[in-house]
View 1 (cartoon, rainbow, N blue to C red):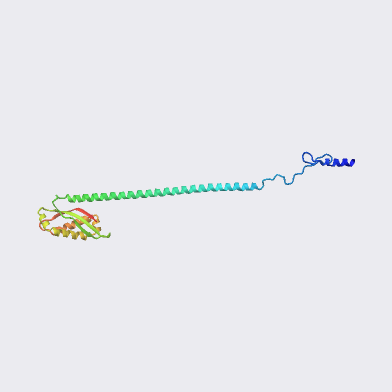
View 2 (view 1 turned 90 degrees about the vertical axis):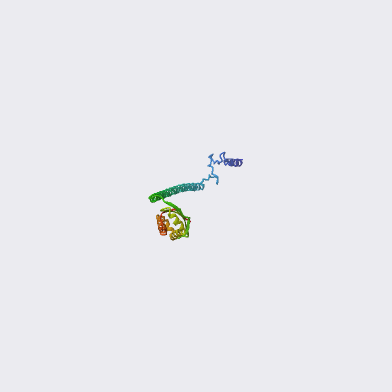
Length: 226
């Protein structure tokens, strides 16, 4: 009976208490052992990865900001250069226009002076009888290739009676004029005094052919190049 009682008590002493521990002999509770493999796992691996990702994002943001600043500086620099070139171009154009305006003013003054001088020459004496001639078309020498001079003129006679002799010698007078026109070059006639010199030469040549009177003046009513 005693053995049976002892056997009964032994398993009771090893009962698991309600908290999961065992009761040692004498009624003291043994500490519960932690279950193997059930300790909480700390996030020691994912934290470095997050740090690297944050650093990468920060570096990318800094690079983007630096790139935007560089682009902005480049655009501003190009804008300043373009503005500078435009200002220089405008200055050059204005200077060229001013120079051309000065040249044109000078040419106008020169033409006005020549017109005044020519007017004084024409008004020096009363105008006599005018004798018109048919137009002339002659070939003249030129560095720019073939050039044709087309001109028409009228003769101012010293007396009305000279008209009869001029009519008789019309062919000879026209021939003398054609010879003189053909001997001239385009460069000579385009000079400031080119036409005036030609007028004097024609006048001298025609008067050498007349006997009863003379030609006072020659007037070009047409004079242009083709």
